[in-house]
Image (cartoon, rainbow, N blue to C red; front, side):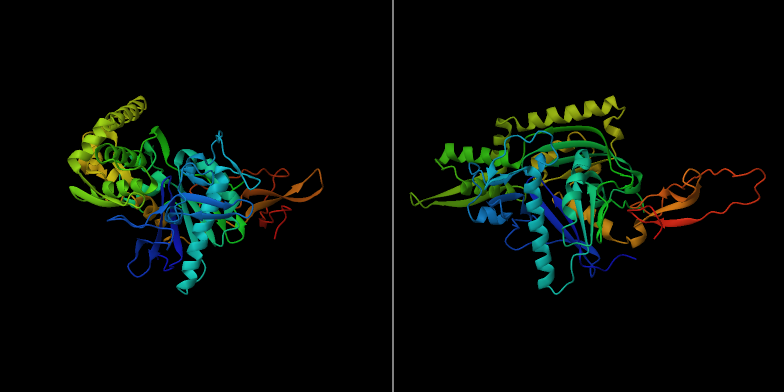
Length: 462
């Protein structure tokens, strides 16, 4: 039976925005939640937490995250204490230049840890205010091509989180679950967010289809950590082709600001950039959009108006669609080298805010049959898909201890234990354990098998 817990969350930690969903036991559906002060909801979009961090005091780990950074005017790119798009650097071998703040060397992993800690802290506070118990389960989604790097990073931080169970799932599998893909296993995931465009052709693990849902990778259960040295078999989507481009919603916002600077003499500032973003979002739902800007230095007001036709002209002037065509051609060429043609692609999943632009959806439909394209919930598909892992999962999903068989050690002249199933193994197992034993003497009529639960330190039984 599905779990009735209201304390299972899924977090889609994105490059530009982060989305959090929770299972609603009454409606038996996922719901996107808002964290007051951290999230922002515009137009028809769900609550989004900007993936932003401002470091107030690195030595004490004091940070401001999410929409609060913008609300306090701290999102200045020239400020060394302000960080955005840090997800891309997590696990990267080359970190680039990062400042030392308050005597502390900063890494992308540290920024990410501060960000997630603040998210969990606010979720816990939300639970307490509602009179609910502690958070039972959190599922984190991670890039499929950086799965191992994220597993290592999250293993180091999840043990201190006030959460009973922490799991991770690759983003393409989560997106497939979120869009209800039940047939076909070759998918093109177009992730077009605020800063980057990623086209990933993936082959799903078979457990992501049909009635058998994947377990994800268990990082923590209770006081036990399973991130490092775990014998869990990692089952993630297999990347068949992938291309990326540093292009996204932020670039479009800047192009719109440039347009209003040229046509109306508008000043560049974080505020005018946010107004441009609002216009862009409105044009995803309507053919015309208007925002009013008041310059508190010159006491002048500006009415910023934009229609879809002008908007799409601006995109074309910046070779936006030419760039998209180049990247699509590249990923399809890679696919052909693997023997996959366009008709072989079972589904096209659109995620990220930029895919809401009607012209982007029209561009996708030039390449694929519209019946294969999914774009109903580009912000929430990954998080809602990951949340399905929390439903119907029992404690028996993995083993807390190793199990072994007792044997006689001739060298030491005493009994010892040989491990045959290691701790952290998902259960039930898809394959049987096979062990070939020989007789100790000729014509041996019987054999005694003693199985035991092994202690993690000594290897002895518990």
